[in-house]
Image 1 (cartoon, helix red, strand yellow):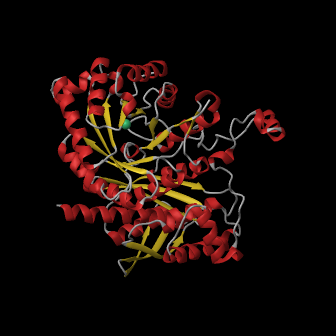
Image 2: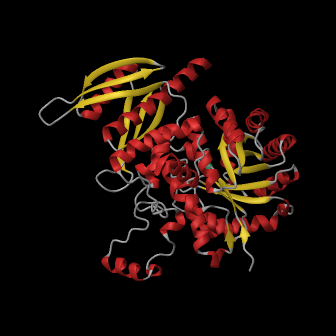
Length: 510
Ligand SMILES: [Zn+2]
């Protein structure tokens, strides 16, 4: 039997970014969008332009800069949202306006206080307006899984009639279960007379842990598009996880007879980037991308896997981009070797970025001797792909020990002006952060601090993720170095930079 092509609609940057504590700034979103393009998703939902100036800017930038996938923006079914959405998307090569309205009884009666006919008319007008701008229009009856079926079929038919090219059926509150959700999709195909004129999509939430199962049930019943996020992040318990859906379709092709365009070898790297940038770590036992997903602990299993991988592995770690760590660079690899390795990894740097990367690479190679792909990725995320820098580290000095008060001196430049401050603290990292605070005079709360090693061994690169809060903003910073104190300072300064840029922008808007 011929296999079907499933459209992968990634909403990491829209729904995923609505995860509690995951706020990403424009530069972080652009970096992730470039990686999603390398992963070869079909559609990137880049944000909700009307919701804030920062959202608008991110969607606009991604629409202009990221090549390959269709770029979608979200809009409520009102003229103002749709106009603003188009304003952000209009320079994309392949733009899509995604408009939605709540259709369940509880949404209609409690949220809108309108009749079904009024809601249907709003949907029709919204789709028409979106189509006046753009040939690719997606319509979502929000909370479909709890919407009365007669009305759901009616509004889908009306939206397609008005020009919707994609109909998305969301289980907004994660209420459905696979057999039920699969039946709903089947019924839509049977009861909506013009359904064959549009693509049927699903968007499942994970409140009962069924988002992936429900999405697969929908595919089995003919759905052509799935909406999902990297690591399954999203509102509340999250969305269907992209990597799980994609690998389920790949491993069980016998059952689903469906393909995706996903470059599965990019999955692991994308997962790491999203967790570093959002600060939302992946649980070790998470399917596909968890640290233990391919670890065989039992001796019997280990022995069997060494004899034949098929004994306990249904897919190889290589197929999701794990243990592609075979290529090792060293000091002698030179600028050219570094450039070509980075290109293979999908990073096309400008000459200035390459210079900076080479400088950082030599520092790492001096300390570590062997530089792996994971180290290069951490370095790129930590040192190269950064937006404008207001504040930079010149030097630091720490004195610490179990019988003396940890003290730090830091030299920073703030827009080219050099400052030096010293402070003590509970430990060397705390002392360094206190010294930085003395320079910036910002009172920031450190909400989270995580340290882990990028590769194994004593000289491994340490990677630090910090979360800070100030003035209602919550910001994540990321830093990597062979020295954990330096990695901590870099992560803290990364967050402070992002905070300063946000504070300036919010002042501009007031
Ligand atoms: Zn959602």
